[in-house]
Length: 150
Image (cartoon, rainbow, N blue to C red; front, side):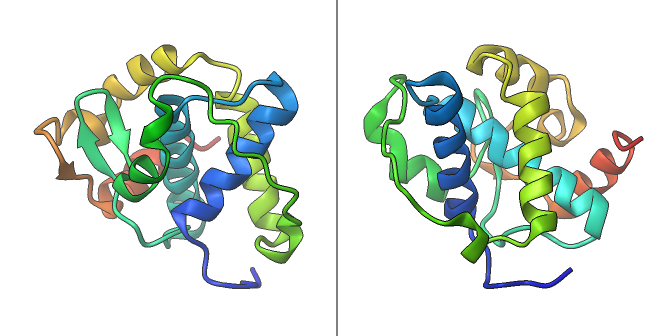
């Protein structure tokens, strides 16, 4: 897989926000965004054995959260994030990246934020680190999501 540039959690968040605006016409909430970023990281770890991005994911009360992304969009509260951009994501992501992001959005983007929250509460990476703001180790995510691959 060719890396175009170092990917950040914020890059992935922007991609999902754009998907949300394009498909839901109103955007996605920060809660939903956090779960999509978590699933993207988890499946990337499982498929490629290295992280999609370096920022940590922590086990917060309402599920996995990337604090950097949360801080960026917390001003929206529970409202949809409407920060639209016309970014050319092919300059940020490879085709493999885009395929993975599209698959994550196709599978998980269909669910409401609170459904995603409940789903992550049933998964070991979050359950093992329920303490507020405890980091979920990437190795645990990698091993867990490997069990979820076909």
